[in-house]
Image 1 (cartoon, rainbow, N blue to C red):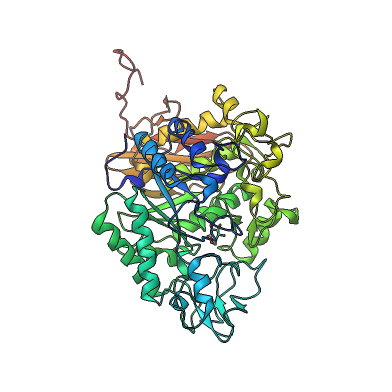
Image 2 (tube, protein in one colour):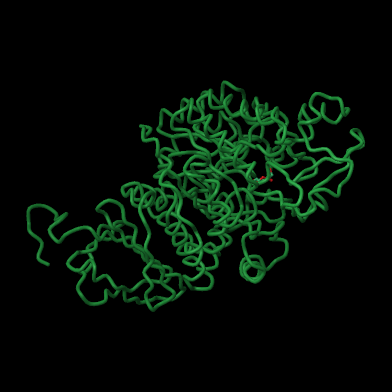
Amino acid sequence: MMSTDPLWYKDAVFYEIPVKAYADGNGDGIGDFQGLIGKLDYLEWLGVDCIWLLPFYPSPLRDDGYDVADFLTVAEQYGTFQDVKRLLDEAHRRGIRVIVDLVLNHTSDRHAWFQESRQSPQSSKRGFYVWSETDRKYEKARIIFIDTEKSNWTWDPEAKAFYWHRFFSHQPDLNYANPEVQQAMLDTMTFWLDQGLDGFRCDAVPYLFEREGTICENLPETHDYLKNIRRRIDASYQGRILLAEANQWPTDVRPYFGDGDEFHMAFHFPLMPRLYMGVRSETRDPIIDMFTHTPEIPPNCQWCLFLRNHDELTLEMCSGEERDYMYYTYARDPSMRRNIGIGRRLAPLLDNDRRKIELLHSLVFTLPGSPIIYYGDEIGMGDNIKLKDRDGVRTPMQWTMDRNAGFSGCDPAQLYLPVVADAVYGYQAVNVESQKEAPHSLLQWMKRMISVRKRFPAFGRGTITFLRPANGKVLAYLRRYDDVVLLLVHNLAESSQAVELDLTAFAGTTPMEVLGEARFPTVTERSYVLTLAPYGYYWLDLTLTPSDGAYGIEQMVL
Ligand code: BGC
């Protein structure tokens, strides 16, 4: 059953899916809606509440679909409009919501608007893009794809003018100063909402407007427009959400929540690399420090926490020193680097160490926010760093140990990308089918953690208080919501650790470890000592009194 709570996203577990990479229903080597519909039972079984679909619109695929050539239809290779509707029905029937990418900032240069725009200064679509006779405007704006682009301006010989683009040169930016563009994108949004979609992951939102003398990011006019989008949703739709992709510092992301009247959610980009730093340097400082710098957000808003996604592990929100550290520890081989970041998946980043994989998931499942899982990370899929751009982390989902990992029945040469086939991460070793069979597999662990997380609204809605025990390798915090207090303790070190916690405020309670339902010693007025295995973690409920939850009729002797 789908929750009817308008704040459903505060408790939800999200899951990111490129349709192309998930499951191929028609055997042409490319994932499609038919294939994805066939996997909804799996997603329901796993406990996912909402899926985010990457762009599935017609596109020349020079940026894997983020170069949209038509916002209002479905690319042929993925299926039909009817398939999208069927996906929505089938997902909703299983209590799963569906949000999709809305690429507001730019289009492909193949989009009909751009084709018309470039034809002549008199074209009715000329004002849809940002044209200029000179490339010396907006010089303070940084270049985002520094590994491929030299300028944010490209000369178009047909238009005999420069056009503005924040990403690839084949992705001209839409001109939001033009009310017609604003309207066209609002119409795009309502078109999809009318089909029953549950919301959007809004791509690259900081860059919508340009203004001379600024860095052309996070401008007030951008916020005004985004608030307008939100008003439109609130006026006509219920329970739909907007999730912001703004790769910025928390203080710059904060305005995207407005007064609870702009985005419902935003990714917490700077936290992500600090989780990796914390576990590698065996210190909680970078993680706590990031929360110290994260402002409070309105009560109807939520952070979205992630470990990996379809892009490189971005290091944009890192100092030079932090970046060097991340490259040195996680991407020593230069071929693992992409743009300002690292093009690897979660399991290989963590040396396929199950303990570290669990630890980092435990953090994103229990820190303030809603977690999102990147497809395949629930089974510890590997990557293929030899593939170009970010393709190395976009290989076919590994379902079984059969041909093409059970992703497609096609001739392997036809696959949109080769399946990972190395000895450690290859589909014979890492796949859904075998992990479903194995009670202690990573997949079974994920399923269990998701279900336990859902029992405690404190994870999605509660306050956080960090405890600061003397042992800096241990990250411990309280999550509190209504009458429930949870204590989360994580050992970021490769060695066993003991920690003394000040829990005197809870003296008399008997902590219950919620994953195994084991009782821990009762808290007293003295420091509470815990020992943790390497990369160990505890989820403890501090709200039980000694008589709570005794099994059967016998009174517990405590
Ligand atoms: C997407 C990228 C894409 C870029 C340009 C991003 O933020 O996540 O995959 O290349 O937008 O559209």
